[in-house]
Image (cartoon, rainbow, N blue to C red; front, side, top):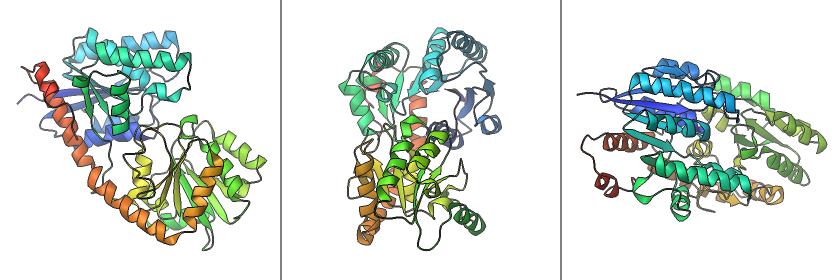
Length: 397
């Protein structure tokens, strides 16, 4: 049986949810049925993994997140050449820039099936105005004319896509992002002790953690400001940032202004996530917008009580006061109150972690997610498919 040839096109990704999502798909697809390749920038932190795991790795040297007309044209030409030469059955695009260039190139090259996983629609990153409207129109236009299937990663995102008319119903699939709930790493006692010393955790010290890129979307500054509010009533705590990014200096400046320098620890990107989670008393995700965050799933699966902002992408994971606590975004006062209240309520913490772990295990398995993606690939590439194929199976849940 001829294998289905799949190419993932993704922008210059760092550590985060999108590369993890692609990794799970690559690791989980049946190698007897699928041949999976990747095209991305050489500056991606995931290049070594993609080179090792992919059937073929295609560098796109000029592909970058920021807008640069000359480099964007060159990146498009690079992607077009890759597609023309290799004749893929499926092109699966991720992130805004790669999805725009990749989908145009795929259509021009006559690729049979063109997919896009939203992982948070780009227009959600803008406040009301010209940029938001432009991003919305681009998303709508590309979904309609350059895409066979748009995959939304959570119910709220799906509802938003339908309500705003971004995606036609017969092109829309909902496949929740997931994590590997079966193969969990063993906590390394030596690594745990190393991080305990690095954080400065003593028996009486409370540790509040967050994980992700230090960028505007994740709003780490609000968490620092919340720490300032917490300090008025509680002093022996640490705020631990597991990740790195362009806002590192801004975080440290804010901490210095609020006299919080000894309370703030930036660990950078770490591989021992389960080990670090075992040191946390509360996990906080103060994002301004999300797709469906893997970091939150990791905390919930590791039985760490969670506080997150009430934005698109959170509701599939958190039922307020049942599996976690939701607060409005960009409000350090309410965020601080929620953290302090949770720290002071042992019974509530126990209830939350029990419900959260069960919810993730039952509903966000990587094995289930990959099986659904595999089904979409097969449907898209069926030789005699008709519009009814998609109309009859509009939702995969």
